[in-house]
Picture 1 (cartoon, rainbow, N blue to C red):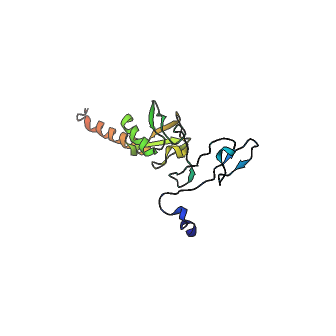
Picture 2 (picture 1 turned 90 degrees about the horizontal axis):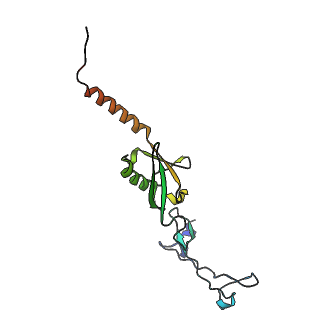
Picture 3 (picture 1 turned 60 degrees about the horizontal axis):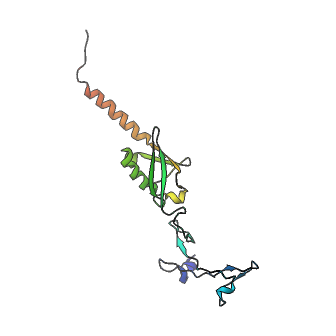
Length: 170
């Protein structure tokens, strides 16, 4: 592994890979772009493949259009017990950033929120596009049970203090 990281392709932050230019001919055979004429490759224009490094560390071919998953704005439908909210957010955002937006809408602190997607609670550091959240997918918002209990205890204490007079019958 150490020898692989010392390779010139992996030094520094940027990785530049050269790729062969491939194009189809009329006979469905492929020809390389080593020194031949590109028009000899069926008349098509060959392009160089661009690469990107994903947040998880995976090197993948870069997508060309911005409408694909992982790029641009998406709308996430967040459902609570009694309401639902349509939230527009970038697909490359995290669940923690989604919680921050939901705290403004629901007045529920991000620490007290639990977000579930596809039946699993998601961590704040998980990226929406890496988990598979797409446009108009549903995310379930639940209040943390410990927070609910704290609210009920505070409400019970306030009610006991709020009624200073008691009737005593003898």
